[in-house]
Amino acid sequence: MSLQGVQIFGTKKCPDTRRAERFFKERNVPFQAVDLARKGMSPGELRAVAGRLGGMDKLIDREGKRYVDKGLKFAAPTGPRIERLLAEDPLLLRTPIVRCSAGATVGLALDAWDTWLAATRLE
Image 1 (tube, rainbow, N blue to C red):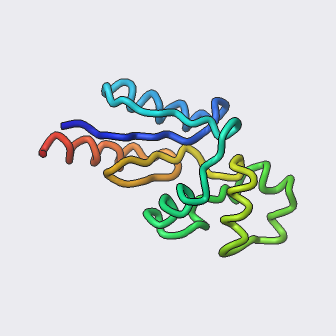
Image 2: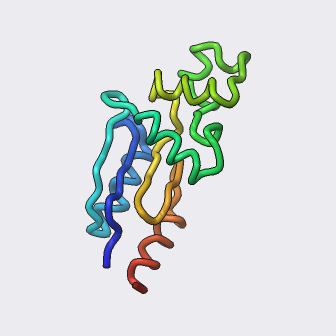
Image 3: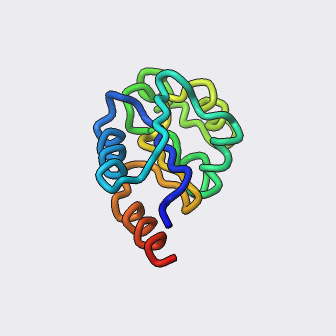
C-alpha cells in the first residue's frame, strides 16, 4: 500500500517546498503540487488542515516578509481574522503544507513524512 492523495501546497520560490516535492518524488509517491502564488486553499481546506495541526495560527507565517510588509507584525491577528487573511492572501501561509489521508504538516517535516511512509509499508 502507498500514500494516497498527497498534496503539497507551496510556491516555486520556496526551497522547503522544493525539498518536499523532491522527498516524495524520490520515494515514488505521487503527489499534487499546488502553487499558492496561483491558487489559494479554500476556506474548507484551510479549516481541515488547521484542525489537524492544532489551530489556524499554526498556518500563518509570522516570520515571513509578506507578514511584516502588510503591517501584521504589530496588528498580531488572531482567531477568525487569521482565517480571513489566509483565505484572502495565500502567500501568508507557512510552506510547505503537506496533507494526505495520513495527516497534515506545515514546514519541512521529513520525520513525519518518513513515519507516514513506514506506516503504509506495514499495512
